[in-house]
Length: 240
Ligand SMILES: [Mg+2]
Image (tube, rainbow, N blue to C red; front, side, top):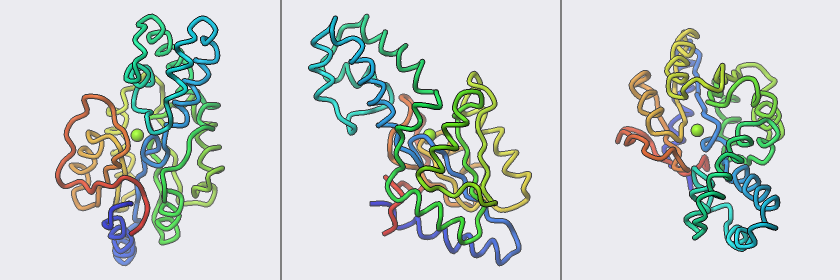
């Protein structure tokens, strides 16, 4: 269940409005509002279907892997399950890379529990919803909009911004650093941010020290920096 501290964000929105300031809530997408486990598993299954004939052992291993076993790198997940053929694992890595960052695969994503209702609650209260994602323009924008809409996140109704990375090559944390300047340009008040990457959450904490910064305890990149003790930790968006 989510942290009870998620509720403190609502009075923060009210307080900003009372000061005549636009409250802004910043939401990352991958592994924050959406779980990527279904996307990863779909890619793994597609790979297995294409390679099972030559490698029957691959199908045996893949059959035992489920959604909860999906981590950051699907080839590492497979290795953890005892599949050690380096050549196939490296082929899987390439296969995954060619698919994970594409519009059509975003259709597999599923919202993190409570996420849709929580974003709606912030929007209904008067916050600007700022979706900020390392997904890139030129391959993921159409699927991102479709996925937000199909799962019922607020979108076509004003006070909703979707900010994607301008190019695939740009570094994610550089992009998010630059997005801070965009967030400041509204002359509103960032009241809350939500991230699964501790490094990004720390960066938001430094940029907007008065806000509540939530670190989603889903998955994060290997070797990520330590999250500050001042971050609110929550596994999902369920209100307690
Ligand atoms: Mg993320």
